[in-house]
Every structure is written in structure tokens, then in C-alpha cells.
Length: 155
Image 1: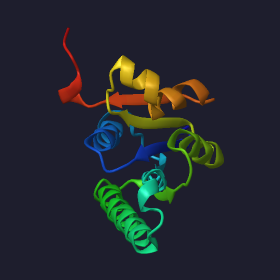
Image 2: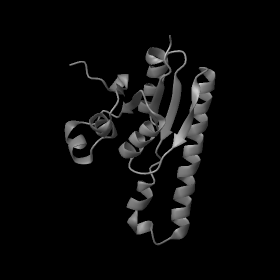
Image 3: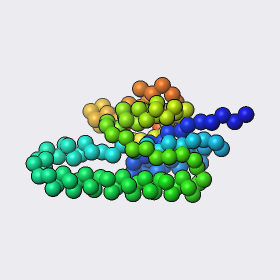
Image 4: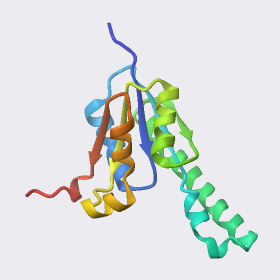
């Protein structure tokens, strides 16, 4: 008997995210899987541009740009899902990426979370943190972190 799995895949507009999606399709996917693609737009970039916060036109333009990029991303992955005949939907979350991704995964009853990693070095991860590290340490379900091939060191 085939059990239905809910696979949550975090997406953004990076090659790392696309690699994680493709890895799922090529290596993990089972017939009957329900896929939830989750995207957390980075509105924090707008808030961190404090010198620009005094001009509402600049803020409106930055928000519009983020929303357009998000719409393009959703369209791209919706098309990829149709091409591969995958069943599921796309969700947009707000908040800190790691927390928002896990919130979505819990709400959807995730069997597994899949995400890419940018492969930051130890120092950068230590000071900035990493979404994949956050998810690995706070998830109550399996997390698969896919590393993009060109960035893997063969040492």
C-alpha cells in the first residue's frame, strides 16, 4: 500500500533552490507525493535600507519589484511542476526565512523538508546564520539539504 507523503520544498530564485527541486524530482519523488513549494520573499532587504525609508516612492518601488520577482518565481515553479506532472501547490510565507519555512511545513503536515544551501563558509555561517542550519536544528521531521554540485569541494 502506497502512503501519501507531503514534501515541502523551499524555493527562491537561486540555482541552489533549483538544484534542490531537481534533486527531489530525480531522486526522491514517489508517485502520490503531494508537494508544497514554499517561498519567503526577503522584504527584510527593504527594511534594512534605513536611509531610503523616508521616501515612500522608493519603498513602494522596492516592494513592487519584490512582488514581481515572487510572481515570476511562482510561475516558473508552477510550470516545472506541470511539466513533471507533480501534484501540489505553492505557498508564500512572511517572516524570517527559517522560521517561516518550518511554520509552513508544520501546517502542511510535512513528511520531509527539502532545501538548497548556498554553501557559506564556517565564519559567514557563524555570524549570519543559515536557513538550512536553522531548519536542521529546529525541525521535527527529516530535512534534506541539497548542495549545488559546482560548489562541492572534492578534498
